[in-house]
Length: 459
Ligand SMILES: Cc1cc2nc3c(=O)[nH]c(=O)nc-3n(C[C@H](O)[C@H](O)[C@H](O)COP(=O)(O)OP(=O)(O)OC[C@H]3O[C@@H](n4cnc5c(N)ncnc54)[C@H](O)[C@@H]3O)c2cc1C
Image 1: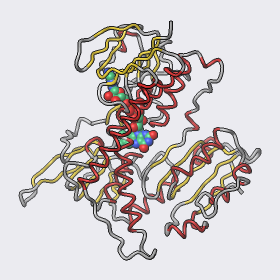
Image 2 (image 1 turned 90 degrees about the vertical axis):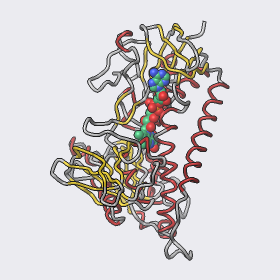
Image 3 (image 1 turned 120 degrees about the vertical axis):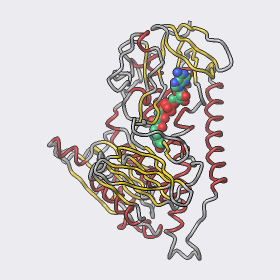
Image 4 (image 1 turned 45 degrees about the vertical axis):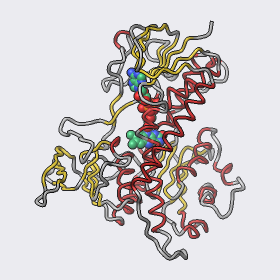
């Protein structure tokens, strides 16, 4: 008899685990209450990056001054942009659904919860609840935006990240609360569309967890684009108020007494796990104090055959990591860990920030190496030294490679600049495969290309 594998949640973690496990011979049921593709497709990665792509096109168009074009301004057509976002989401959803059904995955549109360690109650949207036995369960229910008690989002002027693709009214001005990855992406997105943006930064640096040199390039760009940075301030209250002319605005109050008035505000202060109502207690599954399911290096919870992956597992909240966890779970469920299975190393996950310029990094950061006293070699090359940057009319940013001075093995790196999210793949591969700087240096790369800065940094 084949393994009965029930997956709750059809985001990157759930649908990747489902296809992979079905290919390996499991009898897979995938339960999703909204749409296949999950929040990643519906509200997070895909719509945000689609909107940012249009913002980038506007920014790039502005940077064409001096490139032989007559005009350097582009106008946004909000209706066409909305249609584009919806059509990309629909196309991806159709593609993933087709892949799952072609692999024989039993798809249920509904919600599910654990009744015990081996029993899952599935309630289809148009049917009655049924209880199924599962040999293995994957919890992949994701997360949702964190909303603090001092704020009531209304989807009109006080927004969460899920109200923005695009918002009901396009903001003339907006206050972004939170200067982590999502916050700075929203600053870039709205500034590209011409909104006056204020960013509330609780520390003294945007992207507090990132390399200060990387953050400095972004801050400089924001200031050049007229973004107001409110450093060292925490928002403590957000309300709507009437303006004298019969209109409305949003007031954001900060803990140091500063007050910002803008037409809109958006919260980008992290997320909370969708672990409530999942029946975790009934099955004996442990969570940490934030509500995330605690997992081992096979993504197993404390109950051996119940796994958690994606945002619910409290590891790196990235769709790429969620998918890889899903794949590893499928392999473990099907007993492959004894043959071809490699453990997932979260320290080697590449990540990107889709601002303009883009930011990407992977592996060991320079600051972390110094903090731990580890000896490293750091080489940094500005894109301005490459012919392609001059051709592109955009020479912002740099490539930085961190390596082991004794062996030359690449330990990490960061890239700021156009196409950083693509270029980081070279360093990510080197970090994963323990390649040396000489391996990058001796690769015969394309000319002219921004990747030449990688080879130069590896010299
Ligand atoms: C604005 C924003 C932009 C982002 N951009 C990127 C990016 O560019 N790149 C990147 O790698 N990551 C990005 N992320 C992070 C990424 O979206 C998440 O890490 C990813 O979606 C996590 O995938 P998941 O499979 O854990 O869950 P999700 O994608 O959250 O899917 C979980 C699914 O489970 C379903 N579900 C929940 N409970 C139940 C239940 N009881 N029964 C049935 N179904 C249920 C939900 O309906 C949902 O569809 C972004 C996040 C945000 C907020």
